[in-house]
Image (cartoon, rainbow over all chains, first blue to last red; front, side, top):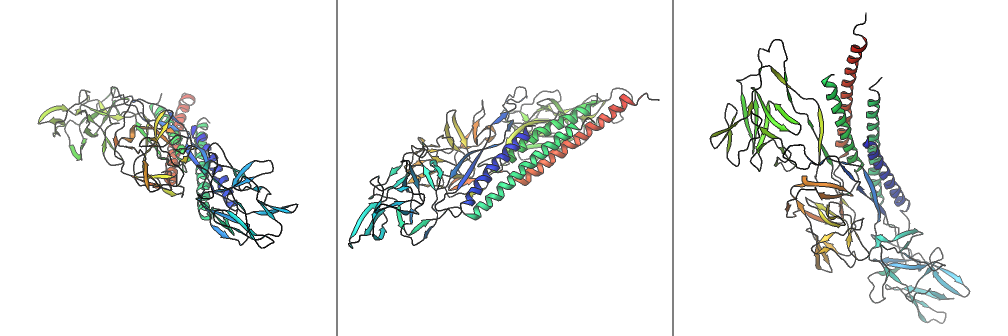
Length: 264
Length: 358
């Protein structure tokens, strides 16, 4: 009974679909979360017979039995979420296709669209960091420091940070680095809203300040791009698809049972 | 032993194969661009049953009776009360009182079916035989049937379509059913909006061409990504083919015309190399949502007339309700054949144990 295994592949695929949907729903309020989608393709086909028995006709005949379904990829949708105003000067959203560049204490580079930054105090300076304490990288491949007593910190659209010093002068601090990738979908999510470059995403392309295609919006954060209604619809279809495949298993099982009961 | 026992078992085997196909359809209820497989099963040839001894039936085979002829476009539909029509089925000569036939491209008389577009299709048809068991060829002459069941071409009698069996023939019987072939149903699936620039759905007939290590393959699954060198590729990394091979983009910011023109920065930079196949029956499924041309056959290309939608994917064309009903049918048919086998078993059990009991 090939049907049993075929239906089992259908149930397993829908389980993975369900896992993905539940992760999307769990992240409905996660800053800058990008929803994922599972893609399915059909499995191999067995050609049971390839020629017609019609003498002299000899045209090959379609007789193909498939083996079910398999998940081939979970692709991430990099559509932009909404930019919500938070009024916090260290909240930054990106309008466009760029990523902030983040460095962890061991020097590994990550990329994120989550611009919810903080200041971490070190001696008499303050460093711009993510909520996990990882460094936000500037255009000079360096950390961004503020001196004590600086106020009126503003970030313009191209990422240039200016602040008023204690002497009342406006000083340019640094420019926040923005990187982009030729294929966002190839990025590997490592949790904490961070992505890592992979062979599939290509190398990060650092955007020069003059030719940025993305704008940084101070006081804004990008919301998750999960649409609850869409996910709910997917949830229903996944559940019903799971169910329909379980019905196939039941049917195959009953047919096997009948065959077994031929001999009393 | 009993002929019917084997008939019932052949039906059970066919139903089991049908369930294999139905379960694959259901497993792919959420697969992008999936097209369902339809099962075609056929009965074994109708053979003549003859009376072996004893009285001949008073009305053996009518030698004079009505012959009804009606036209179905290009095809003829005949029904007779005398003798039998004969066709050459894959498993031998089959006899019947009704016949539907047309003339195929080689001038032979063949049975036919109609495809999705309603066109006559003789590619899987059986050859019509004349009364002496030979195939009938008429070339491209105009044909007609006279009232005695003779085939006329250009006014001259070519063949007698009716086989008149010996007088002790009492009718026909067939001895079961077999699973003959699968057929891909290319009806349009649903169009689901994804908002992804690299998702394309075809509305209408046609395929994307993909370059794979095993040569060109065709697919309706328009879920693509960009490779690290900027080519539009499938999830396996096979490039989508444009006018000059793979399509290369600087980034995902581009628009697509409905005919597959790739527009970046207001310039048409490439166009998808779409293919539209008129004889889709010559395509085989290769798995991973690809189609390949069946070995030893050619495809006929026609201009692509569908439209391509960017930001959409085509869903599976499986209708769960129909598949459920199909599955219930399969199961109940299996069950009734199963009952027949049991009944035969009861009869045999009586023969073995009860006959001769005092």
